[in-house]
Image 1 (cartoon, one colour):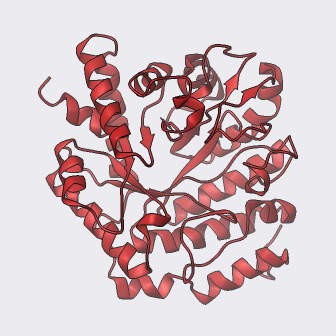
Image 2: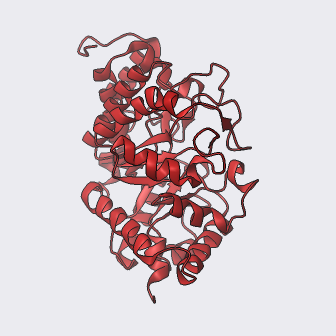
Length: 369
């Protein structure tokens, strides 16, 4: 199992510290065949700097064992969750799109946002938020949701997935099986959800099924304990949810965890056990956003679990193969476009006009409902 660590590494997405890669980060990514990175505000100074950073990250694929492009991912939903500031187009929250209820507009929104992401070198966006807002006191989701109606949420989520695909951006539906009814923020503690399986099937899962049918390539887990479905494990660590319930929806593609460093998990589980339990449950890709020690601990833990026979090597290989297949089929900006061309797309007048129309909730003349 000489290449075991590199097989595992392909299924990890990690955060980086600053606006360029450190030598240690370059070494870690290449020596462990890390699958990709996630970008935050700390990594972004300007469009030109970000373009250079993405080019630097993507250039590492030449030194990786799989020679596959890297995921360069970000949270760009619009509204409160938007890592890219001006001069990038500033988009309204998803509630505005929900209030307007126009799949055509939602598609055009995602295509325009995706165009700016793609031009910069980003290829994976953790959007759309497919959570149905059933609890008005839910501040974590709030206006990140399209609304309270599962059919509306599913319809517009589907449109976003198709728009991102059109812009060559991999979309990710989140947070499965639904984060819209919680009060506790899973960044700080574990939400406990009392919804029944029947309610979940008739409400949240209907929205996710529409996104799945739109050919979304990734779904992100929720760090929530659904006590009436699996009283022992939050969704991210639950085989009943990530394997059995996902299979019930017909979804057969990749499952990525939400950040494995969030307190909803780390307050109740040691860091060594988290990626192992997530893989056992059915997750394919592990996400680590901040602490660089955590993804190192996770990588060591999965390697040890395979060597000890706790995890089957075939499972790890399958996860790696699915990940590489997605990358090679979807990531088109292996070599980034020149920055001069990218700059013309960032904050494009058409995008700014579209964002204003959504902010004002005025349907453009060329858009149908």
